[in-house]
Length: 264
Image: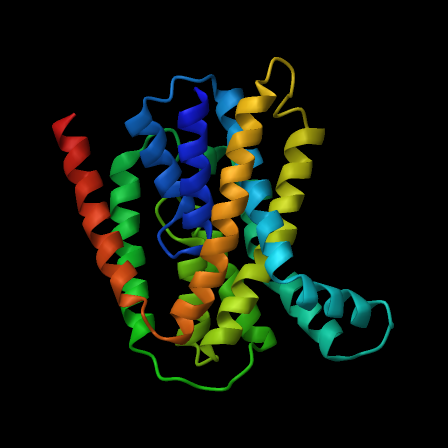
């Protein structure tokens, strides 16, 4: 893929990682529209780089929160930071188990499977619509909530199901405060992304040999910058209960993807 294509995919990843419209689904749609003819390992390398960029943008946006959490953890006391960290760990378990035991099965769902993407986007639309109708509360995420949210995150591995949409929706529908739900959703994914990247690199799944680093660097930059914007915007959107517009968008794109598969 050339510089422009990778830059476009970087913007798509940066925006859709945080906006509740499915980054994986949009990347598959983007690759299909742009005519991605790269080898599987090259395509995986690009995906890993773009996901790392958005993980880094999350760290930048929530740097104060992350610092306070780490500070609390290293005090070695049973404090609020330690409790929050335990909830994050609990939320990671379902996705980690799915990734470990069903990695090859999940990979088969990708690769321009646009029909699946279309149907999953419609499901995402339904989740967002229901979330927008939920009442505002001040409730914090509980330990049991963390596990349910983690299950939602595991299901969102499927292309077309928005990870942020599924996790925020499940948290809000469980009665949690919308702002706290968004914060938890964005922070819980960082360890998983970094862990997956480490696994892919150390396991030999990806290689930097013969990689066009200038092209990939531009993709990284566009994903990082657009991710900073989208993460900040998404927090505001959830607070103001404006998810219905993304529900409509996901429904339209989902139907469009289904029609596209029938015409090609």
